[in-house]
Image (tube, rainbow, N blue to C red; front, top):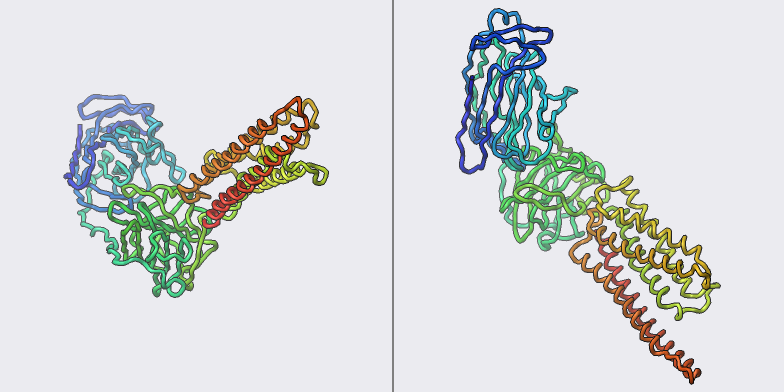
Length: 635
């Protein structure tokens, strides 16, 4: 057995686990050949293409300690130590019968194992040109934990993980092509966790039997990558030059980060052929902004300031769809600086207006929509922002001339959707229900051929249905279809929409007062209306927390609970009052005139009380409505 052992010294400041990479060399023959050869121990074996019997093994054992350390929340590369791995090789006596063969068909069993790791990438390349295309193809052994990758229409050029779950062992087969190079090297990338991974750890070099020994050119130590120095800001940013020297985006509008800790602030100051960027806001996780060609996340040039303990990392990145940002090199940024004080994170940097040859960086002399977002971070890893980013109302060129601009956390269509639903299911339906339930005797006089209470009730309920229909369409227009990211809210909204349309249709076929079917209609009408109101309230609770209309919390939840308690409380008061009123009117068999007088007096007192309660209810209802509409307007 031929063995190669490479061990790297452990550096105590970094935590790594040991793992070993094992390659078992299996031999076979080229297609259309069925020839014997002689293994080292002199035993003749008949080899066919249908199987790859084990003849020799080649084993590489390494400890994942300090070959390459990638402290990679920001894709930085710190090369602590590079050591040369050397291997001595035996010559295998194939005998005369093997001499006419120029290439051997070779199979490998590749095993990666060790303490738990989350991800990996395994590939084989020509040892003479590691930057060239992958060599050969892989065959899976367990498709549950590994998957083949396709590159340039070549299936199985590399193997990777199927999920980020922890794993301790991966085994696959590698098949050498008929035109394999003289020397092949295996490279493996291993991810232990988000901030620690190793890229292209070199495996052994496998050579053709008749190839010249592979010689590695004398290594020259490349200088360590240099990154822009980072300094600390000594004072807070100021908005005094916004509109004069700075292009500023602020939320709330016209806030000053120097005086208001809750101010989200982003400024761009042109300095010859570069731009100085300042970003500030209350955040314990990260702040970020992005340049975008449209109002949708994806294919954007983004920049993040990420807090990790008491340090802030400034990191360029790019966005590909609705996914986690891909971190890029910081080489294009200069004059990096940051500050943490009183829960406020501030960072600044400089970059050139144009960066030819730098991938994923936009030229800043063009107009873009500008996104400003914040979110949570843990140990340098960022999480999805809970609120829709602040997005400018239109495209701007930050290098053109200084301006003061604003933006919105929600699109107009979503704001209109929320406002219309609040008006419909907080106010119009609430007032309409109380009138039908408690005010029939108060407003019983005819009005355009029908009782006044019925005309008002019908008008309010038709208004509710109309507002619901309009509001229901708006999210579909905004999303261009169904939203799969909105949880249960759209499903509840569809139920409310169906009930809101069925109610007036059912009312159109209402039986007459003395029709025997009238009680069935009354109970059905009440049940459907009550169900619609309950589901609508649940939908509003969920909708307030969606990123597209994320109202400030936690007051929004308490306010909605207060509205529900207010409405239910008024209904309970009116129910108790109606019950007490009915108890006052007693049927006295010996004094019918007294009965009539008692009923008239009690009824007059009851009407007055109901009108007072109704007026107070409307005031409270409108107050709750204004609170929510005002919050939506401030998004």
